[in-house]
Length: 86
Image (tube, rainbow, N blue to C red; front, top):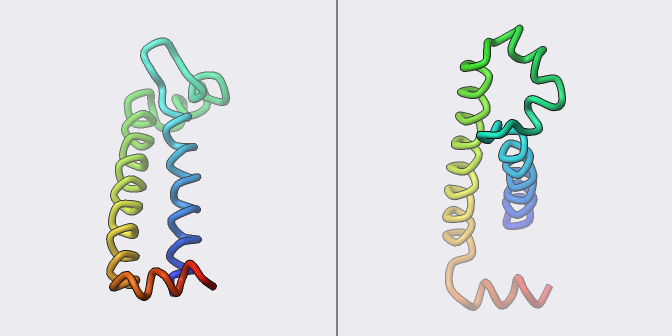
C-alpha cells in the first residue's frame, strides 16, 4: 500500500511540474509557444488559463492529501524503520 501511494505521489509530482511549466507567465510561456493559438481557438484565452490554473491547484491539493494519508499508513516510527530496511 505504501509503495502504491509513493508511486502515485511521484506521478502527481511530475504532472504538477508539467502544469506549472505550461502556465503562462507575464511575458509569455510554454503555453503560448507550443500550440497556444490552438488552445485559444478552442477554449478562448481566459478559459485556457483558468483550466491550467485549476489543474495546478487540484494536483497540489492531491499531493498534499496523499502525503498526509501516507503518514497515517506509516504509523509509528517502527513501521517507518521497517519500510526503510526493506
